[in-house]
Image: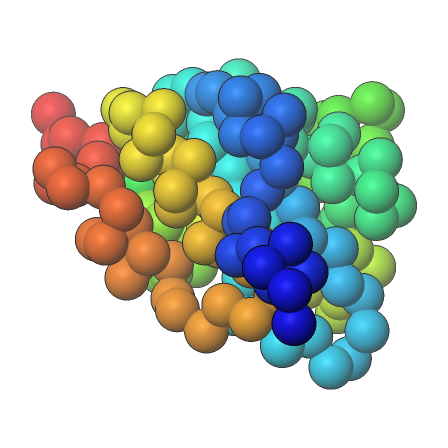
Length: 164
């Protein structure tokens, strides 16, 4: 094979997407078949731990690609004042408490079509967030969210809300 024909190493994300990743961004790898191979279906980098402020934009982004979201599962210890439901575009979305950690959110479409998203801590640097999100959405990713964050966020401490 000639040098010009040798394959270049694959990029995790196109440069345009890399530049667009900023707090408030959701990246989704949409695979709705039963044979999804990766551990995670996407990643989300909220600006804060305020569910009522951050979640509507995520739900709108997911709904635009997957259809109506019915439930969101998250670890309530990781978020401020978690209500039992939010209304987004005149649709009620139920919020369920799961002890899954502050690094994951579960999105449900319909009765049982679940999508797991890595949650990048709001305080993450742009470079660290990009690296974590790129790894999370790789089709062959078999690494859990917590492990991705440990590997990509060098100063990852507890980002959970502090008890008063």
